[in-house]
Length: 181
Image (tube, rainbow, N blue to C red; front, side, top):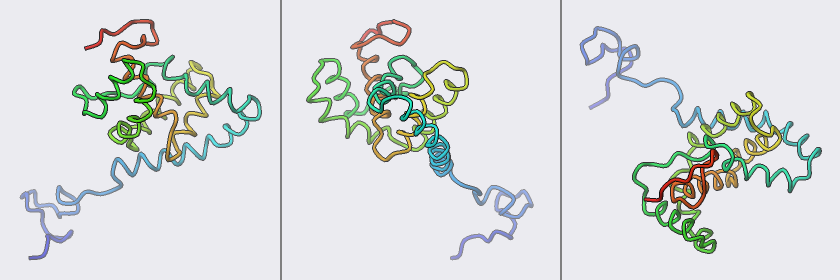
């Protein structure tokens, strides 16, 4: 049996054609919009990134970029209330300061949180910080550029910092120590 056509009356009884009612979703998905946003921001900041790399040493800029989640809470990944086992194991390794185990688990943990929407959220937060002059602009631009790459060091750092705070292994940017659960 064929599906309902776009120009037929909608089955919900509204009297409208299916294309004008609840029958067909139109436009790009949220994930497609997030990917497009990331690509656009990546191109836009590439020029600023190049200028920043020339002005500062590349290694210094990279270090400043990786420090951003430790200084700005909104740049830490939002963690689910109930952590999947991969995130919980990584959190335990961070709490016990076991860097070898952290390196081993980070890839599996990132697979649970690395989505275009997550990256787009971080880019929006970085743009807000840039607009309000609450961040070193060159480091923020480097982070935006890094978030457009397939393997993002900034995303890894944002996840690690969020887990470290939730485990009580470090303080929040405001200096509060979260009680580990």
